[in-house]
Structures are given as C-alpha cells and as structure tokens.
Image (cartoon, rainbow, N blue to C red; front, top):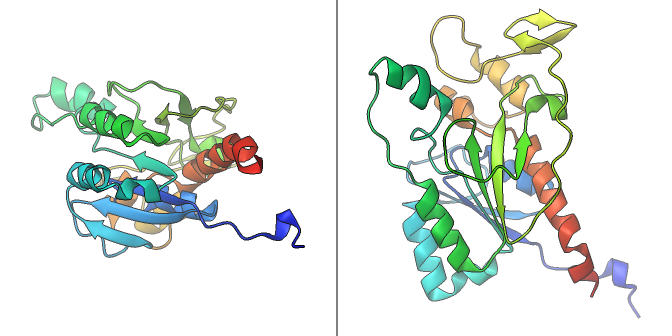
Length: 235
C-alpha cells in the first residue's frame, strides 16, 4: 500500500486577475500553484498561462459556466489609481491626472460570488479594502519598502510583525539600500536596480516593474493559505 505522504495530489490552481507582468503570480508558483493570469493589456513577459481580456468579464464568465471550480484561490490586483496615495495626494492637490474608476468594489462583489477563498491587493492610500495583511520588502530582506495591503476573503491568517526599516530610499544607511519603485524621472532607479530590489528578472519593462508586487509577498501569502488548508487536506 502506498504511504499517504507519497500520494501525488493534483496541483492547486490560482487565478491571477489584473496580473500585469506576473509579480504576484510568481509568488504563488513558488509555493506550488499552477497560475493562470488575466490582464486587459498584452503581457508578453508574463511567465505563466496568460489570457488577454477584461478581468471582471472573464471572472463572470467562469462563474456562469462553473469553470471557476477549477481554482482553489483567486488573487486580484485591480488598478489602484483611484485610491493610491499618489493620486489622492500630490496629483490631486496639483490638479494633475484624471478621474479613475474604482474597480475594488465590483471585484470584491464577484469574488464573493465565486464561493472560493480570495485575495485583493492594493497599495497604501484610500482604496476601500480591509487591511487584513500589510506587507513590506523589509519583512523579506528586499531592496524596496513597497507597502502593500491585502484583504482576505473566505480564509484568514495572522499579520506578521512589521520589521523596522533599516535604511532610506535610494541611499545607504546601516549598509542598506532601498529603491523607489515608481516613476521614471530624474533620480529614479535603473531597470536593473528595480529587478534586483524586487527579485523580478523576467521583465525589463519599467512600467511593469514599477507596478509589480514582489513575489516574496504572495509566496508568503500562498504558504499561509496552504497551511490554513492543512486540516482539511488531512481529513
């Protein structure tokens, strides 16, 4: 009789909505998930199965056809311009930019309909999400601060301790260099610095790098999700 520990279970699959270049998806893949990404823009650098199209339209179709049941988890990183700190702060105070559509609420509504566990990611700002987790690069020894907030649906885990920042952006202090992973103006880091700081090597497109989640964040989330399922899997 085969020992239970040697039985190969089917790989879990995650749906990566608003996937950009695959920072979030790579973290899930490192934790053992099969990843399917969806983005409205063409993403030739995305390292997993990619579907080009409107993320919410595709999600609604998967729900309607029952194909959503192929997934164990859904991750969504809806565009953050409506509520990010830069938009609601400096840009708005100076009258720059334009109005942006808030996609967080409709995304959450559809995720609830799936009946699956889910994750919504947003940067610091006024985006209306519950901050179940706040992660930053210092927690994982990365060269970025890059705070990101995560709302968890149909599962939960505990917030890790927030590690004190030991340096400053784009300069050394106590032997630590952080880069500012946004924009392209004077004084901004090079593409290579961005790649090294976030451990993202498969794309050299600045716009993709400045929007990406460091894979370490979602690898940590994925492993905590798997740990939360352990009693269920053992049963």
